Amino acid sequence: MIWYKHLYVGDLVKGRKDRIIERIESDRTQTGQYLITISENPAEMLDIFSTVFLTEKRKERLPMVVGLAGTRDEAIFLVRKMTEDCLRATGDVDLRTYFQEEEKRLP
Image (cartoon, rainbow, N blue to C red; front, side, top):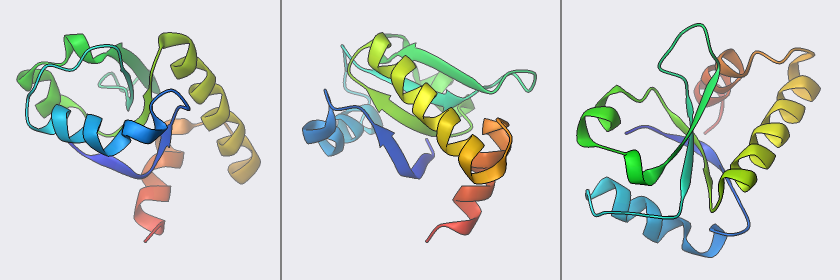
């Protein structure tokens, strides 16, 4: 899995971020968190899904994880923040391009 260098992290999981990522990476069942990813479908920008539905096959297909949240509502809040940041930085809301360009630019 590719994790965005400046991952958006919700307040509900902020203190457990590294532990959650480690568990996801090592294929240990992780419940109660949501991932925000660049969409697998080129016609869409982002996907939100529960880590309960994260399979090895799905992990291989994910373009990039850009956010981690404790609840679906928190994930939606993070998408709103991402959209606002993208709009402020580029004048557009093309999140897919924004994250790909930011990933190249950021150390």
